[in-house]
Figure (cartoon, rainbow, N blue to C red):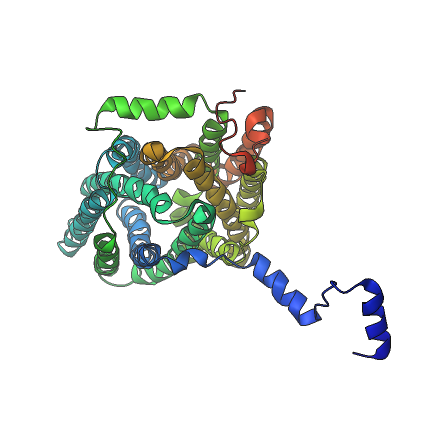
Length: 441
């Protein structure tokens, strides 16, 4: 440092740090980079890696089933029925599975239900190898897989707050969603190639079954996670208690309602096979991967998410952004532009997903978390499936473009108005969790 510089530093006082430019850049990057501290926890790290690997395979199946239905029937309505087939079991077994997760060891429940998902995937593989070509059988297998998935997800979501400190729950959820989005990028791109091959559907289901063994191993290695002892046996009364807990808390009610609006009104997924045929020479892999690409980019630059206090307001803004990007993507007739806009939508969806999950996990006491996760699974996994039905049915009586664009616009309007009018949700401050969870609208 020059003499003039030393004099200036001396005049400024002895405690003023001088940070070099490259240090400031590193600090800013660190503030926005994904928070990796939860990875220091071995149980969470194994769970994250196992689920991330398995999720790549599950996305192969999630793409292959609707494309196989389209290949058999060439009907967007029938493709939408794939979503409807998964909706009812996800709602029922999500809610009841959450109650089970509050009454039994969550590790055991997660392991058993995960084995159920794996066995159904093997069933999908077998029906394709045998060339059954039955939409009805595919729908039955989707029902069974959705039921097992709902129970496994309820247990798994309730595990995280037990193995991760509360101050790292938001970071753990961000990592969870980010790794899941890696699967949502890689899986559809691989599936898009496989489904064009001879026996491509059997390859997709077979790879899914193989990769899912990583999730089974991670579940097996979890420590025992027994219930808190409040409930001795599972009953529908427990489900009712969970629903009543939500019903008197506007923050929780709205966190679910805005997600339902986002997924039911603006999810264009069931239109991808038709739009791929109409506009993009049959290419569907990039469309299925696009939303996850944006979410992945948002995830790796998500260090700021945990520092936002007004999470209700941020959730509304994120979902309005999702709806707007979806609406614009429906107007695009160039594949790159459609993928880009869907990626923007995916980035907004990642932000909203982290806030929804974090609000739920930190707002409820541990003895209610299984049931809260059950409702979360029913809404988050059931909403897109109901959206598949909505989009497919609307397209069957109008057009794919109208169904796609109008859904995005409707999502923006509904969420913006509802989010602003419910003042406890709009004013929700994460730093005040527990101070007044019983406030009413």
